[in-house]
Image 1 (tube, rainbow, N blue to C red):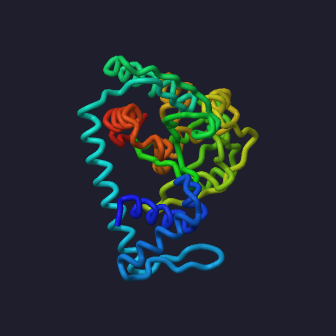
Image 2 (image 1 turned 30 degrees about the horizontal axis):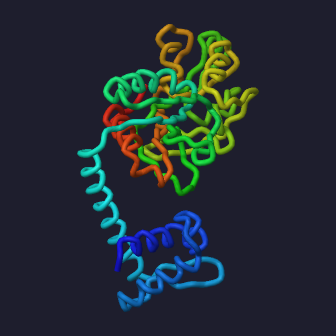
Image 3 (image 1 turned 30 degrees about the vertical axis):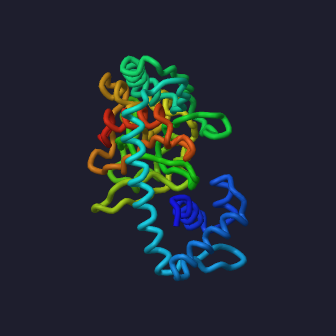
Length: 296
Protein backbone atom coordinates (compact mmCIF):
# COMPACT_ATOMS: atom_id res chain seq x y z
CA UNK A 1 0.00 0.00 0.00
CA UNK A 2 1.31 3.43 -1.00
CA UNK A 3 0.39 6.93 0.13
CA UNK A 4 -0.97 7.58 -3.36
CA UNK A 5 -3.45 4.73 -2.84
CA UNK A 6 -4.87 6.54 0.18
CA UNK A 7 -5.14 9.81 -1.77
CA UNK A 8 -6.93 8.04 -4.61
CA UNK A 9 -9.31 6.23 -2.27
CA UNK A 10 -10.19 9.39 -0.31
CA UNK A 11 -10.87 11.25 -3.56
CA UNK A 12 -13.10 8.42 -4.82
CA UNK A 13 -15.15 8.46 -1.61
CA UNK A 14 -15.36 12.26 -1.55
CA UNK A 15 -16.59 12.38 -5.13
CA UNK A 16 -18.62 9.12 -5.02
CA UNK A 17 -17.38 8.58 -8.57
CA UNK A 18 -14.22 7.22 -10.21
CA UNK A 19 -14.75 9.65 -13.09
CA UNK A 20 -14.97 12.71 -10.80
CA UNK A 21 -12.02 11.47 -8.73
CA UNK A 22 -9.98 11.08 -11.91
CA UNK A 23 -10.77 14.66 -12.93
CA UNK A 24 -9.86 15.92 -9.47
CA UNK A 25 -6.53 14.11 -9.41
CA UNK A 26 -5.86 14.50 -13.16
CA UNK A 27 -5.53 10.75 -13.62
CA UNK A 28 -7.39 8.28 -15.83
CA UNK A 29 -10.60 6.63 -14.62
CA UNK A 30 -9.10 3.23 -15.38
CA UNK A 31 -6.04 3.98 -13.25
CA UNK A 32 -8.24 5.11 -10.33
CA UNK A 33 -10.38 1.95 -10.57
CA UNK A 34 -7.36 -0.32 -10.82
CA UNK A 35 -5.65 1.22 -7.76
CA UNK A 36 -8.81 0.97 -5.64
CA UNK A 37 -9.27 -2.66 -6.64
CA UNK A 38 -5.64 -3.32 -5.73
CA UNK A 39 -6.17 -1.63 -2.37
CA UNK A 40 -9.18 -3.86 -1.66
CA UNK A 41 -7.14 -6.90 -2.65
CA UNK A 42 -4.27 -5.90 -0.33
CA UNK A 43 -6.65 -5.32 2.57
CA UNK A 44 -8.83 -8.35 1.84
CA UNK A 45 -12.08 -6.40 2.28
CA UNK A 46 -14.68 -4.73 0.08
CA UNK A 47 -14.41 -0.94 0.50
CA UNK A 48 -16.74 0.31 -2.24
CA UNK A 49 -19.84 -0.98 -3.98
CA UNK A 50 -19.99 0.03 -7.63
CA UNK A 51 -23.18 0.63 -9.58
CA UNK A 52 -24.06 2.47 -12.77
CA UNK A 53 -24.78 5.79 -11.05
CA UNK A 54 -22.31 6.27 -8.21
CA UNK A 55 -20.15 4.55 -5.63
CA UNK A 56 -21.46 3.42 -2.26
CA UNK A 57 -19.18 3.00 0.75
CA UNK A 58 -19.31 -0.13 2.90
CA UNK A 59 -19.08 0.10 6.69
CA UNK A 60 -15.46 -1.06 6.57
CA UNK A 61 -14.87 1.30 3.68
CA UNK A 62 -16.12 4.25 5.76
CA UNK A 63 -13.86 3.29 8.67
CA UNK A 64 -10.87 3.00 6.34
CA UNK A 65 -11.79 6.36 4.76
CA UNK A 66 -11.69 8.13 8.13
CA UNK A 67 -8.35 6.55 9.00
CA UNK A 68 -6.91 7.39 5.58
CA UNK A 69 -7.95 11.04 5.94
CA UNK A 70 -6.23 11.27 9.32
CA UNK A 71 -3.05 9.73 7.89
CA UNK A 72 -3.03 12.14 4.94
CA UNK A 73 -3.62 15.09 7.27
CA UNK A 74 -0.71 14.05 9.48
CA UNK A 75 1.54 13.66 6.44
CA UNK A 76 0.50 17.10 5.19
CA UNK A 77 1.24 18.60 8.62
CA UNK A 78 4.67 16.98 8.63
CA UNK A 79 5.42 18.25 5.13
CA UNK A 80 4.29 21.74 6.10
CA UNK A 81 6.48 21.73 9.19
CA UNK A 82 9.51 20.64 7.18
CA UNK A 83 8.91 22.97 4.24
CA UNK A 84 8.52 25.93 6.58
CA UNK A 85 12.06 25.25 7.80
CA UNK A 86 13.59 25.26 4.34
CA UNK A 87 11.56 27.82 2.42
CA UNK A 88 10.19 31.33 2.94
CA UNK A 89 7.07 32.71 1.27
CA UNK A 90 7.96 34.34 -2.02
CA UNK A 91 6.52 35.13 -5.44
CA UNK A 92 3.12 36.36 -6.59
CA UNK A 93 -0.02 35.77 -4.48
CA UNK A 94 -3.35 36.50 -6.21
CA UNK A 95 -6.22 37.17 -3.79
CA UNK A 96 -9.95 37.74 -4.41
CA UNK A 97 -12.25 39.28 -1.79
CA UNK A 98 -15.68 40.95 -1.56
CA UNK A 99 -15.55 44.69 -2.20
CA UNK A 100 -16.72 46.14 1.12
CA UNK A 101 -15.07 43.54 3.33
CA UNK A 102 -11.83 43.79 1.40
CA UNK A 103 -11.69 47.55 1.83
CA UNK A 104 -12.49 47.56 5.55
CA UNK A 105 -10.86 44.39 6.90
CA UNK A 106 -8.49 42.86 4.36
CA UNK A 107 -6.58 45.96 3.24
CA UNK A 108 -4.61 46.52 6.46
CA UNK A 109 -3.88 42.81 6.78
CA UNK A 110 -2.40 42.62 3.27
CA UNK A 111 -0.05 45.45 4.17
CA UNK A 112 0.98 43.69 7.40
CA UNK A 113 1.52 40.39 5.58
CA UNK A 114 3.73 42.06 2.99
CA UNK A 115 5.79 43.81 5.66
CA UNK A 116 6.57 40.48 7.33
CA UNK A 117 7.08 38.68 4.00
CA UNK A 118 9.08 41.10 1.83
CA UNK A 119 9.65 38.53 -0.94
CA UNK A 120 5.90 38.23 -1.65
CA UNK A 121 4.10 40.29 -4.29
CA UNK A 122 0.32 40.51 -3.82
CA UNK A 123 -2.34 41.07 -6.46
CA UNK A 124 -5.73 41.80 -4.82
CA UNK A 125 -9.01 41.94 -6.75
CA UNK A 126 -11.99 43.29 -4.82
CA UNK A 127 -15.29 42.28 -6.40
CA UNK A 128 -18.67 41.06 -5.26
CA UNK A 129 -18.84 38.47 -8.04
CA UNK A 130 -17.92 34.87 -7.27
CA UNK A 131 -14.70 34.41 -9.19
CA UNK A 132 -13.61 31.16 -10.82
CA UNK A 133 -10.60 30.56 -8.58
CA UNK A 134 -8.96 27.93 -10.77
CA UNK A 135 -10.00 29.31 -14.15
CA UNK A 136 -8.89 32.85 -13.27
CA UNK A 137 -5.70 31.67 -11.53
CA UNK A 138 -6.41 33.01 -8.05
CA UNK A 139 -4.45 31.51 -5.18
CA UNK A 140 -6.88 32.42 -2.37
CA UNK A 141 -10.42 33.83 -2.24
CA UNK A 142 -12.23 35.18 0.81
CA UNK A 143 -15.91 34.29 0.75
CA UNK A 144 -18.75 35.15 3.09
CA UNK A 145 -21.81 32.99 3.70
CA UNK A 146 -22.77 29.47 2.63
CA UNK A 147 -20.30 27.88 0.24
CA UNK A 148 -21.33 25.93 -2.82
CA UNK A 149 -20.19 22.31 -2.96
CA UNK A 150 -16.83 22.06 -4.70
CA UNK A 151 -13.44 20.40 -4.54
CA UNK A 152 -11.88 23.62 -3.20
CA UNK A 153 -10.42 23.67 0.28
CA UNK A 154 -12.22 26.03 2.68
CA UNK A 155 -10.98 27.21 6.06
CA UNK A 156 -13.33 29.08 8.37
CA UNK A 157 -11.71 32.27 9.60
CA UNK A 158 -14.38 34.19 11.51
CA UNK A 159 -18.06 34.93 11.98
CA UNK A 160 -19.68 38.21 10.96
CA UNK A 161 -22.58 39.67 12.90
CA UNK A 162 -25.71 40.58 10.94
CA UNK A 163 -27.78 43.64 11.92
CA UNK A 164 -31.31 44.62 10.94
CA UNK A 165 -31.57 48.39 10.60
CA UNK A 166 -33.44 51.33 9.11
CA UNK A 167 -33.14 55.11 9.00
CA UNK A 168 -34.59 57.47 11.65
CA UNK A 169 -36.82 58.90 8.90
CA UNK A 170 -38.24 55.46 8.13
CA UNK A 171 -38.74 54.83 11.86
CA UNK A 172 -40.69 58.07 12.19
CA UNK A 173 -43.06 57.11 9.37
CA UNK A 174 -43.69 53.45 10.13
CA UNK A 175 -44.42 51.31 13.14
CA UNK A 176 -41.22 49.31 13.52
CA UNK A 177 -41.31 45.49 13.65
CA UNK A 178 -41.46 43.96 17.12
CA UNK A 179 -40.84 40.38 15.96
CA UNK A 180 -39.27 39.00 12.76
CA UNK A 181 -42.74 37.98 11.55
CA UNK A 182 -43.64 41.69 11.36
CA UNK A 183 -41.13 42.12 8.51
CA UNK A 184 -43.80 40.79 6.14
CA UNK A 185 -45.51 44.21 6.46
CA UNK A 186 -42.38 46.21 5.64
CA UNK A 187 -40.39 46.92 2.47
CA UNK A 188 -37.10 45.08 2.90
CA UNK A 189 -33.87 45.83 1.08
CA UNK A 190 -32.38 42.55 -0.06
CA UNK A 191 -28.64 41.86 0.01
CA UNK A 192 -27.32 39.21 -2.39
CA UNK A 193 -29.45 36.08 -2.31
CA UNK A 194 -31.40 37.31 0.71
CA UNK A 195 -35.14 37.07 0.25
CA UNK A 196 -35.17 33.95 -1.84
CA UNK A 197 -35.13 31.87 1.31
CA UNK A 198 -36.02 34.66 3.74
CA UNK A 199 -34.13 36.38 6.55
CA UNK A 200 -33.09 34.15 9.43
CA UNK A 201 -33.49 35.05 13.10
CA UNK A 202 -33.08 33.07 16.30
CA UNK A 203 -36.43 32.51 17.99
CA UNK A 204 -36.37 30.64 21.30
CA UNK A 205 -32.88 29.42 20.43
CA UNK A 206 -33.88 28.06 17.03
CA UNK A 207 -33.04 29.63 13.68
CA UNK A 208 -36.12 30.38 11.60
CA UNK A 209 -36.48 31.89 8.13
CA UNK A 210 -39.00 34.71 7.65
CA UNK A 211 -40.30 35.73 4.24
CA UNK A 212 -39.31 39.24 3.17
CA UNK A 213 -40.07 41.33 0.09
CA UNK A 214 -38.92 44.70 -1.07
CA UNK A 215 -38.21 47.17 -3.86
CA UNK A 216 -34.44 46.61 -4.12
CA UNK A 217 -32.00 43.74 -4.36
CA UNK A 218 -28.24 44.19 -4.84
CA UNK A 219 -25.13 42.05 -4.52
CA UNK A 220 -23.24 44.97 -2.95
CA UNK A 221 -23.91 45.81 0.69
CA UNK A 222 -23.08 49.47 0.32
CA UNK A 223 -25.88 49.89 -2.23
CA UNK A 224 -28.32 48.38 0.26
CA UNK A 225 -26.92 50.48 3.13
CA UNK A 226 -27.38 53.74 1.22
CA UNK A 227 -30.95 52.77 0.32
CA UNK A 228 -31.63 52.12 4.00
CA UNK A 229 -30.09 55.48 4.95
CA UNK A 230 -32.39 57.10 2.35
CA UNK A 231 -35.40 55.65 4.18
CA UNK A 232 -36.45 53.11 1.53
CA UNK A 233 -36.92 50.22 3.95
CA UNK A 234 -35.32 47.81 6.40
CA UNK A 235 -31.99 46.12 5.67
CA UNK A 236 -30.21 43.13 7.15
CA UNK A 237 -26.49 43.65 6.60
CA UNK A 238 -23.09 42.59 7.94
CA UNK A 239 -22.00 44.84 10.81
CA UNK A 240 -18.84 45.97 9.05
CA UNK A 241 -21.00 47.56 6.32
CA UNK A 242 -23.32 49.48 8.66
CA UNK A 243 -21.09 50.16 11.69
CA UNK A 244 -20.24 53.75 10.77
CA UNK A 245 -23.85 54.58 9.84
CA UNK A 246 -25.08 53.17 13.17
CA UNK A 247 -22.44 55.17 15.05
CA UNK A 248 -23.36 58.42 13.29
CA UNK A 249 -27.10 57.88 13.77
CA UNK A 250 -27.82 57.58 10.05
CA UNK A 251 -29.19 54.10 10.79
CA UNK A 252 -30.96 52.59 13.79
CA UNK A 253 -30.87 48.95 14.81
CA UNK A 254 -34.25 47.20 14.84
CA UNK A 255 -35.37 43.84 16.22
CA UNK A 256 -32.77 44.20 18.99
CA UNK A 257 -34.25 41.26 20.89
CA UNK A 258 -33.71 38.85 17.99
CA UNK A 259 -30.25 37.86 16.76
CA UNK A 260 -29.67 36.86 13.17
CA UNK A 261 -27.24 33.92 12.76
CA UNK A 262 -23.81 35.27 11.84
CA UNK A 263 -22.28 34.74 8.42
CA UNK A 264 -19.13 32.67 8.17
CA UNK A 265 -15.97 34.05 6.58
CA UNK A 266 -13.85 31.49 4.71
CA UNK A 267 -10.48 31.39 2.99
CA UNK A 268 -10.90 29.19 -0.09
CA UNK A 269 -8.15 27.84 -2.31
CA UNK A 270 -7.58 25.04 -4.84
CA UNK A 271 -6.30 21.68 -3.65
CA UNK A 272 -3.25 21.90 -5.89
CA UNK A 273 -2.22 25.10 -4.07
CA UNK A 274 -2.54 23.58 -0.58
CA UNK A 275 1.15 22.72 -0.37
CA UNK A 276 2.37 26.09 -1.71
CA UNK A 277 4.39 27.84 0.99
CA UNK A 278 3.04 31.32 0.23
CA UNK A 279 -0.61 30.19 0.20
CA UNK A 280 -0.17 28.31 3.48
CA UNK A 281 1.56 31.29 5.05
CA UNK A 282 -1.21 33.69 3.99
CA UNK A 283 -4.01 31.37 5.16
CA UNK A 284 -2.22 30.86 8.50
CA UNK A 285 -1.75 34.63 8.83
CA UNK A 286 -5.47 35.25 8.26
CA UNK A 287 -6.46 32.53 10.75
CA UNK A 288 -4.27 34.11 13.41
CA UNK A 289 -5.63 37.60 12.80
CA UNK A 290 -9.29 36.68 12.59
CA UNK A 291 -9.17 33.67 14.92
CA UNK A 292 -12.85 32.94 14.28
CA UNK A 293 -13.82 36.13 16.09
CA UNK A 294 -17.20 37.82 15.62
CA UNK A 295 -16.27 40.60 13.23
CA UNK A 296 -17.90 44.02 13.29
